[in-house]
Image (cartoon, rainbow, N blue to C red; front, side, top):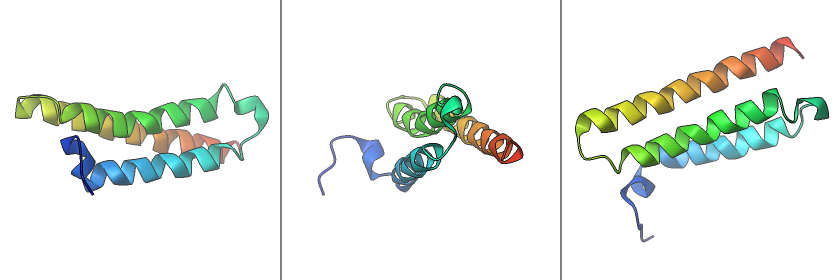
Amino acid sequence: MEYKYSFEKLDVWSDARLFIVEIYKLTKTMPPDEKFGLSSQIQRASVSIASNIAEGTTRVSDKEKIRFVEIAYGSLMEVYCQLCIAMDLS
């Protein structure tokens, strides 16, 4: 497979994409009244994970690259928290 961008070679980016697909499948099972609430927030945060990994690879300095990985990890923790809340709400 030929890659156009360096992040496409990263397993963590590929895993994040698979995670997004699973999140979208899961949030489709949530009640319709959550469409613009918790399910939308979970979807946006999951997309942010892969997006920040990709954006970080465009940065020149290691410090900047690390910062984007930290942001991606923060988004992952946001998804975790929101999934815990969704479970609390049944």
